[in-house]
Length: 293
Image (tube, rainbow, N blue to C red; front, side):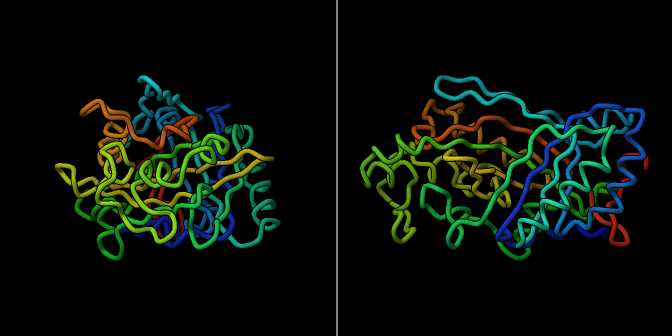
């Protein structure tokens, strides 16, 4: 079985950068992606292709599609750029900067950098709200099963699908809430991360309990906080063997099932969303054969 990109399954790093590209010159795309194959190792540089790039190459990745916009009372999530997504991982911001520059230069003029967001690990792995993030992540083989396409599904075996969203926190609104109101919105106590049995049905923990869906909706979250000036939030990243589990969770969060909207939306909102396919590795390099390269 081809190997998944290692960075998908590794813990989040202390520093990161997310690069999101749009398609600029399709005629140069093949050469740019061959160059990317030489630069991306799948561990410090995780890569995902969007349907825009796949379509431009006249290729087909079963299960890959555009992010479905959400427009419901109190929640609006539009499409973000979705040609190429690169997650640069590391411990040194200077090194990440220079890697970012090299990649951006190598991909031009085929791909244009649209968004660049620096991210970091906060405390022992908390969201900027102070609550622990990814508590219910599967581990071991369960993480592989949730995030990686199985070996029986050629030619996509070893690859992954990733749903991304950039969330912007309203810190003033959050800080105006009482401690109990915050805990009930999340469904856990901030102090000890214990789940609140008596939390309301709108609590995020209850909205997204992965085992409560049929079928179960497990994803592997690798989200990280971001900050720019005095603004900040969460770069939400969820890897899956398909987008099914993520879409099931998102649907319940926005109240599609029962009209109950996730209480997180009281103090944070996703600005945009996008879908990407993360190819497997072959001989240590990105396997671009499903794209015809």
